[in-house]
Amino acid sequence: MRKPVIAGNWKLFKTISESVALVDALKPIVDKTRSVEIVVAPVFTALSRVSEAIAGSNINLSAQNCFWEEEGAFTGEVAPKLLKDVGCSYVIIGHSERRQYFGDTDLSVNKKVKAAVSADLTPIVCVGETLAERESGSTFTVIEAQVKNSLTGIPAEVVARLIIAYEPVWAIGTGKTASDEQAQEVHLFIRELVARLFSPGAADKVRILYGGSVKPDNVKGLMAQPDIDGALVGGASLKADSFASIVNYAAS
Ligand code: PEP
Image (tube, rainbow, N blue to C red; front, side, top):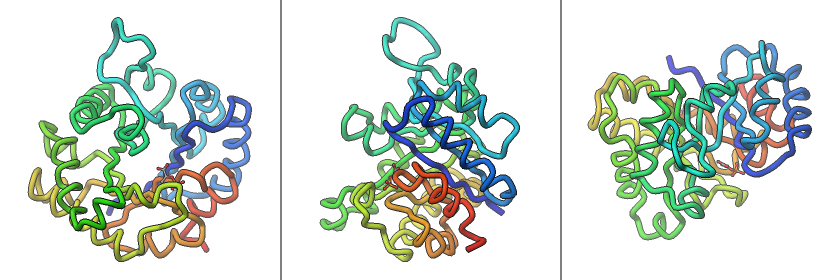
């Protein structure tokens, strides 16, 4: 059985005190939840204080990006071991906004994933097609190349422990969600691809999250799909009540 993961990507929102206030509001509404792994990804500057605020709770900490080197003359970068040091257990890698605005490529994603795994972080590796790619019928070709190139050289037993997030770019922050069937179709494709590229065991274990305008009112249908193992949530993770409703999707 794959334990569902609900992860909130706070992007470039919230000061330190707003971030702490959000987890303080979230904690009591999700503290009975055991069946879901809960993850929040604040901005770098808030990680330390959010880490203290969630200590001893069932909320886990993620960063939104990392570099691939451990240390050195790399001004402005943050190494995976420093994320571990501040209390992260996850790191989002290759989010489409990073691919679009900051030059992340499958090659850099691959280096970051390897570095994150070496630092004992669980990478949440993002893939997804643009609207133009979907409309031209190349969704599966694009996803196949992203998964293959982002995970190249990683042993099957490590792939089994990774999280992959399928986030169609046209659904991120747009209010347009992929239908349950559209999402399931790509998730199944990714799982079969992992079986082919790595091993059936890795495919069975790897968790594949859906991301793209997940809200309290559409999460249940998505989570009912056999190959959807959770959600990466942007906008709806910025308020405690909407994120908690998504975390507690099974109770609604
Ligand atoms: C995201 O940031 O990964 C995301 C899916 O955003 P939203 O839920 O706002 O579409």
